[in-house]
Image (cartoon, rainbow, N blue to C red):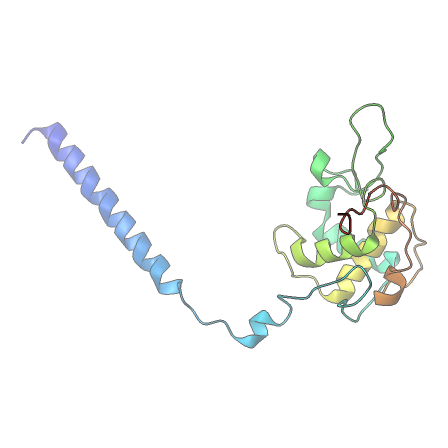
Length: 177
């Protein structure tokens, strides 16, 4: 057998061995039972009417520290973002150029913001914030956009009272025939 054939054969056997070991390791973690504590907050459904929101609360003043620790890497120190998709502050939906969609210019409901942050943020550790931390971060983001005062206690009741600048920017066609 030529040296080249031996090298190719050795490489193929090595790759097959690595793939086999990798599959065995993955199979060991598949089917691991999930206990109730892991599912505790998995299916929280936060409705637009305010039902389903957890207890807790906080102010923008409290949320600033959490934002600086957990959100700045993607959203920037002042909510300016590291890309168009991570920008939180500013924007203008009435612009003649392509509109910049941010919390302050686009989102019609503060409840949507809460639900999104609760489920998906921070991006590197979704669902790792407590309910109070979510309220606090949301309060800070709303405050950066000039929507609420920094001392307002944001909780499940006050969240529903927040009026977003683009609240009338969407048409509800869910009941249309």
